[in-house]
Length: 112
Image (cartoon, rainbow, N blue to C red; front, side, top):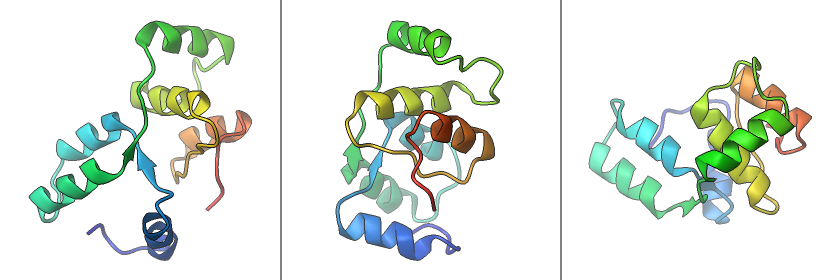
């Protein structure tokens, strides 16, 4: 479904063991792009476990409390962090340098 790469096997294992979840903002971001087999890809993403978005007011508190300003992450990344922190045992799996660094500092990054 997605391009092959260094982490394709790990991703497949997470999917097969029902350990992969996604944030609805990520689904929306992907939907804005060019997807291979668009309808099936979006249908698949919609079937994954969905993280619950945090309220914007709570996100603002999180940004200040965890000093997330000027870390190089954006709004979607901050929402991912907030949702992971609000969901027991959920960790971020990313190759994004800034998101990975922040997630690691908060103890919510799973290493690839």
